[in-house]
Length: 250
Image 1 (cartoon, rainbow, N blue to C red):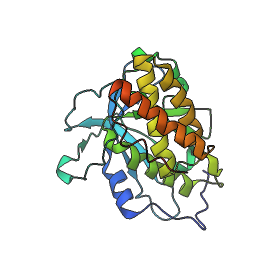
Image 2 (cartoon, rainbow, N blue to C red; image 1 turned 30 degrees about the vertical axis):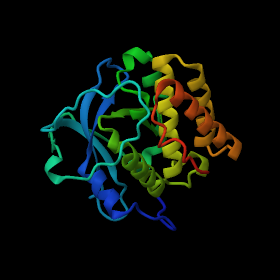
Image 3 (cartoon, one colour; image 1 turned 120 degrees about the vertical axis):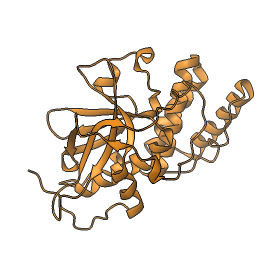
């Protein structure tokens, strides 16, 4: 088994680890299934010093199922406060796991083979809730979609921090999700969802701009274009862009 070099690395903050240990509800997408499965996703780091933490998922029970998310709308959800009473029970059956030392990359969006083989209409989950973990062997991925939008930011940031912490070799900085990059990618994916639902060419252009922003390849001109275009959409379609205009350099 590969061993991670922790020298010079910092574990995620305790509050982040507590949230990851408590778990969140996701939908697991499997290559051989057309039906997604509702799971509880959580981190187990109880293996002791020197061992890699493990990401586990198993059937979710005892958790409410909220109504499906809208397929359009650019509102950014605020993180919800954690509530022990709201934590779902963990089922003892149908579980699976992957060690963080075996995760090569966090992919935010519906970009792996499992997602791309489904059309937009058949994917069910809006693109900004989809994410994948690319494994370092066998060209495999594990693919999920968040049930609750409020889990997106804290969970993706926490997963990225753990992937970096347990990585056997340093990860290229361009492949690491930071909080500013995640904010921009959420915006980009929400614009993509709008473009898919409304077939709007202006939104397609914004998707291209925010793609470059999320990669850190942009200028003040690009940010100005993003804000101006968002205001144009708001004027035409009454979209709330309050969370769009303050985009800053990554």
